[in-house]
Image 1 (tube, rainbow, N blue to C red):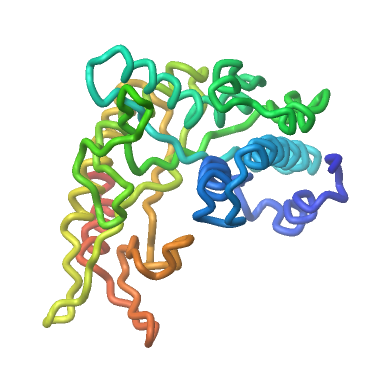
Image 2 (cartoon, helix red, strand yellow):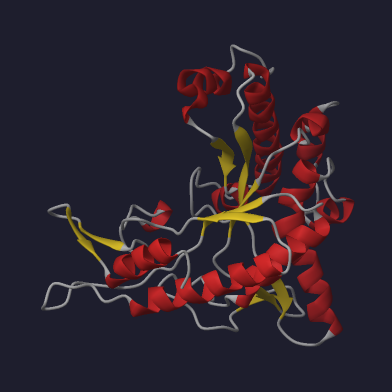
Length: 302
């Protein structure tokens, strides 16, 4: 789809005009590719790695075309992608675990960052995902220049680190939340943010998602006590502030989520909000984390 005034993004940009100061192009490419095509958990529910690689390139291209469409309107809004990223660590001190962690970082982070911020797919990352002929055929002349269209900020969505053993398997090292896939390691946020500053020319960063699923329910007094969520958010905000002190251009923080929501393939089974939703009645009950977070925002500090 060529960029220009008739493309769908340009229609949206012009319709909303200056009312939107910042645009995010595509949300969580890694989730779409890994869970949509890698294991079929999420839409489109397909287990087809080669199709996932083609989808990855088309997601990248769609991002670049959206950036170009915004620039063509003349609007002064900022634009960038929102990528879910992870801090990757070897699960032990063995050479095998260190090498496996480096390969995992290529496929889970750099594969989704380098095309946008450096204008190339890392050759080692393509080798690690066993690049298919279908993906090679999908990459046309000029695509990477479109993908590399300059962005104004990078949305960072961080929830959990990844630990990799010598066999390349992901292993659980840290405590987990109610979303069992999520290990809790706040320092991983600091490591990720400072790594982005170091590797990607100091691009402005915004934490567009960070939060925790808690199996919370109203107590007999009607309150919803989700202290583990407060602990999680506080510790991650501390690490975000620590990254700012280290020179990271971190411009904003958004938690996930305001209210309990329909969460991908998990539906209503996981509660991520700081406001409890009683689904049968739609009644809203602010959790104790809501009052805590309001205080953080009011004081501009924890």
